[in-house]
Length: 230
Image (cartoon, rainbow, N blue to C red; front, side, top):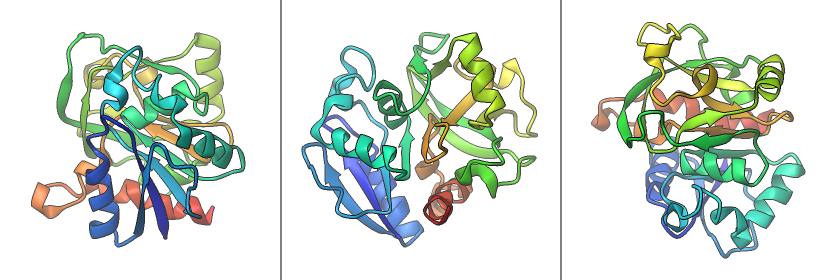
């Protein structure tokens, strides 16, 4: 499978996801620059984490206008598969490809730690093959991960089965105490209505190697192959 990974000025997780996809999962990876205008016939696009353009204004607000995003937006509207991780999730929300917005964490502090996620959506291909009763240990590293939607939009998101992951404890229990940033309904990741664009705040690429002591992220990233086949 051929996957494009976009690098913006300020991206700092681009090589992490490149390494996970190329070395741990043995996919073909195309490294794309923010000024590129050709996606090179990739089968999926990943927007990595980091601090694109220094996170001036709102996180992702400037990167949303990078030249390559014109191609990513067209690609997504044509049914192309796109995954945004952390800052990539923020960029997808700013671009209008995903609903909602990411606000400052309730604690107003940057949070970097392992958390647990529960796969939710049974119709979104990236999570449909995951055990919805087994918690996945995945790291987070963000200051603006508090997912927010108006109540009516949130209800619609839930009814459309667009929530792909929720924060939970190690036993899979979803509660306020397992919510690290104040996100509505413990939401850690969502997809669009067409279920071809995905965003999540946790970093699966940081949990893909026995050398790192955690391989739970492999199951999530393998969902990219499911995305292409879907």
